[in-house]
Amino acid sequence: MELLPNFSLLRPRSITEAVAARAGSGETRFLAGGTDLMPAMRRGLMQADTLIDLSDVAELRGITVDNKGVRIGAGTSIEQLATHPLLARDYPAIAQAALAIAGPTHRAVGTLGGNLCLDTRCRYYNQSEPWRTAINFCMKLSGDTCRVAPKSDRCYAAYSGDLAPTLMVHAAVADIAGPLGRRQVPLAEIFADDGIAYLTLAPGELLVAVSVPVASGWRSGYEKIRTRGAIDFPLVGVAVALRCADDGLHDLRIATTGSDSRPLLIAGLDELCALPLDDALMRVDKLLRKQIGPMETTLAPATYRRRVVPILVRRLVHRLMAG
Ligand SMILES: Cc1cc2nc3c(=O)[nH]c(=O)nc-3n(C[C@H](O)[C@H](O)[C@H](O)COP(=O)(O)OP(=O)(O)OC[C@H]3O[C@@H](n4cnc5c(N)ncnc54)[C@H](O)[C@@H]3O)c2cc1C
Ligand code: SF4
Image (cartoon, rainbow, N blue to C red):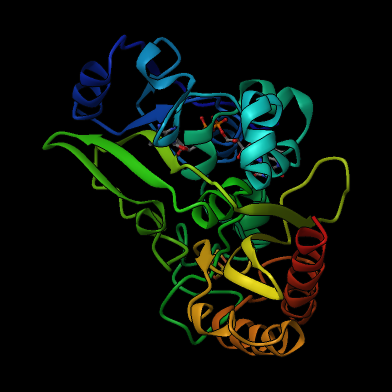
């Protein structure tokens, strides 16, 4: 049986205290709902001498709405995102993705921050220690070779959080606190295309909140393909946000998860909106083929994941345009 290793637990009550605790000695990690971190520590995938439990930091929790848009604290539960009436009405992709995360008990304790900062996944990595020992490990942890692409000098483990693409198509901005102060960046910029160093957050930085601007005129939706319909990570997930013109598309944004080591905002969509819808969608297929790069990191073949993304995009675009 895999046992949880010993660790110390700190309970800061403010963002300042949390950031200061992270700068303490030994290996420290933030703990939110623990639904990813705890199983990872039990499997030996992550280590920590000290966990900094964020659940007493009131400033991290809650959804606030004003005339600029919505601000969601990083400690807000996935369940709250799934059930918030304004999100369901104005930012439906976010609510749909939240409802599709894991099972009800995970959603009750899992948080926005934990979901965005989720470790990348691979079928050779998300395994027990004896399983990984039997294959002599891999480059992401304790080994020197990638089992997916043995000649590669990088890891292709896939980013598999459901919320990130939905926030990205709504032009979300991340609010980050760290030892050097506060900074705000487009959410897409906190992710790196690397299965090992998958976040650009500096050591000790804490994700505080995510803000999305007012979504007037935008329609959005999210769809994912997964092995077990009731509870599973996305093999791939697609978020679409669009605004309609009289006879077609006025604006289109697409982002994917599960396809690459980071959630991917598809580039080059602006000039397609002037085209008739069928032509625009054919060009979207080409852009997707060029930009997404699933590897054999899941039991479902990469070719399947590559082919299903354009189908999900078309399905969503037609659904959203129908109103
Ligand atoms: C059976 C099962 C099914 C799952 N299915 C899905 C799924 O379908 N889709 C999906 O997206 N996820 C899934 N998950 C993963 C996980 O449950 C969710 O992603 C959840 O939202 C993680 O949030 P958490 O608060 O529990 O994170 P934690 O486990 O507490 O933390 C995850 C990581 O984020 C870091 N972190 C947490 N908060 C912050 C912060 N504010 N700033 C900086 N770093 C932070 C932690 O240090 C840790 O490295 C599943 C997990 C399980 C066990
Ligand atoms: S992509 Fe390669 S290095 Fe990364 S986790 Fe999988 S096998 Fe390991």
